[in-house]
Length: 395
Image 1 (cartoon, rainbow, N blue to C red):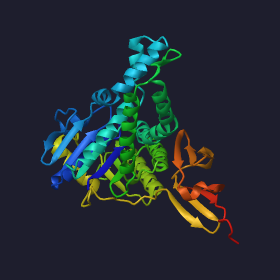
Image 2 (cartoon, rainbow, N blue to C red):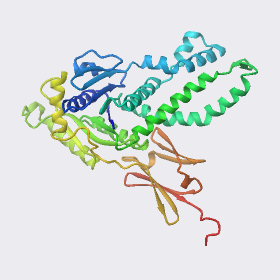
Image 3 (tube, rainbow, N blue to C red):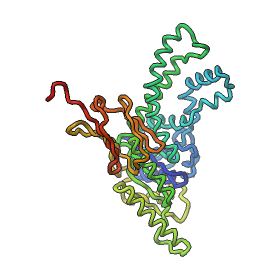
Image 4 (cartoon, rainbow, N blue to C red):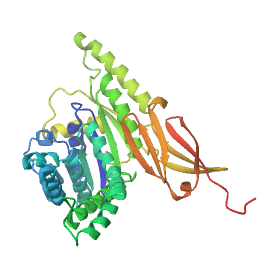
């Protein structure tokens, strides 16, 4: 069974280097490893000091690396949809060149990188797949895409396809508007199916983990806390926090004394905030981390004698508990504040919004016939109570 590790963090914290170091360490132990980058600003090639392309390239024994060409994935998966949208915009008076730009929706490149990840994992060629994700904002958008596309397919695509099948034998246009061909719907449904499989894969706590990479700096820590909340909202488990570039105690230069104090304070804050999630400090080393030898050195500092592929922390996930008068749905939301939380039910779905991030949670069958009786934020988790009516005839 292939293990998946996703590394993310604020831009500039060294997540690519830590991801590459983790991959190099696992390969040195004889595991078959692929490290891949979904960050548009690829720097994986720089970390290994080896040219990398769209396909896996061997960079060390048992270790392959790649930098995904998002444009190539876009052409392969999105062509039918793109062609229809260009035609639709042209009907609306938009020039061809402008239409070509407009149909490249934000997030599409990351979306197809997810599909590529699923195929690599299910192919069985690797024991470990390490993903160097984009900075946190892009990563959250990427991991939210399966939910967003599922809503689109269920609410819009399926009814639209039925209507198109009725109309198309009669005319190719309605009121001058081009009717999409079946290939367009098929492409979106195919992508949706693959993303649903990715979603299930990444939410499997035994197979996939997210590792946050931070620096001991106030603003970086604040973003990491927000990221942890959003990842938990979508059901993705953080099993470790890597604190990179901590000034070691061996540095005695008076000029850096204040920085050492700050780093110690911030490290203590990170440990207190994320407990019981493991915090793995890595020192600021005395040279750039480039090439396999340097990456292995960093990996040793991060993991010591531990197993870098292990599930380092079993994070809590969404759960449902039976109570005397119904059920309680519990959704972990670490670091969330009550004022940032918005919650409402619509039909068989629960809509949860934290800050600017929203998730639509399909309700389990047992909860659909119940009414929301209350909700509260307790110990870093949202608890939603459902009052379920007693069966007919019950006393």
